[in-house]
Length: 184
Image 1 (cartoon, rainbow, N blue to C red):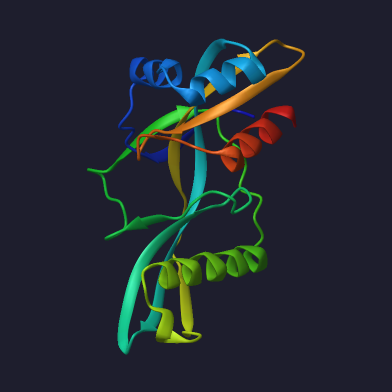
Image 2: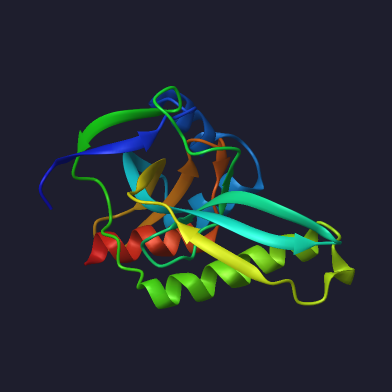
């Protein structure tokens, strides 16, 4: 893939902090070292997200929220935004470390509906029944930065991911997304 300019959310984790997070003592580090070997290298990667304005009625109140959903396969957690990210929250970078947007509109709408409903019910709106959701996809994409930690050998390389905005190590879905992208 050719390097191109993208608009990304600003990272809250530096390369050095990512290395410390990957090497932090604890059960997770022990598990990864036992399963996949030691941390060999790290790299930054950027996942495209589509922004959606979602209107719904919950507990008798009309609500509008702005969500970001990954445009690769819709597997990652939603991002919530108070408003579309502006220049203060974003940076333009040139990179080739980004998977392509592969999610179809139809599949994206299905996944977004499921994820938003799950969030509504998790927040205690159990009596809502089946709220009516309306989606408005905003133009363009915003990229979310991740740090990837590579473990093992060239023959058996495994990947862990840190969400560089939320400052958290991601789970199996993110690892699978990046491993599939890198294998393609």
